[in-house]
Image (tube, rainbow, N blue to C red; front, top):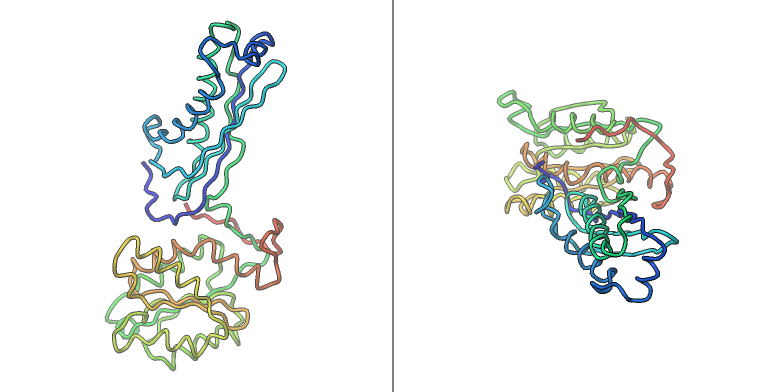
Length: 317
């Protein structure tokens, strides 16, 4: 199976449909409640729900999912029965296969219930109608490329004693999302230097995004959160909460991070941990959802489907 452990949980929904072609006479027998095996709709509904919950046991590469809801609806036409199944789950991967499997099994159950009455019966279509909740649903596009800086705070790296991996990872990930990295800089863990640098990015350079790494721990030289509070005009507490919550599911040490996020003017500033793993997990939690903030800063509406700006499409796998 594909590794989905890095993905955050989101509400996933999918609707699939199937059509069973039957004779009009067969439908009259169904309506009269005279089917020898009993009510085909009630049995098919139970079968669909069971199929949705057991898809991973049938389709080899499907992940076992905690199904939260499975709704089955039947529509009877002049010579057909349409099945519609909607499945929901809060999880890391989609539920389209669960919906498709459920719709297929419902159609097969109808076939089994009615086959002695109608030898011409046929299952004509099984298709995905809609799915929502995947990463692509949270990508915000922009016509004007977002401009960013990556700032590495480390005494050892700035002194040339260690090489940087975290900052380079940030720059690479931003590029995948179509964000233009205007500057990549390494500075010491000095609060005044941090404040001056980040203020320049926001006030003089007018960058859209500043992502920093390092100085969010509890050692004597970890002063990034205190420095950032001298820079922020507004806090973004939910951003830091999302990073820690995502990380805590993967390591019990995430709660020790003092990562912060905030706004200075129109510049979004996010302070990530110093470790490469901490950076990777934080970025997994934040992107692409974080980029929606720039639409809001420019007066966009949450529900608008036509963003005002557009960047190259995300290449995030």
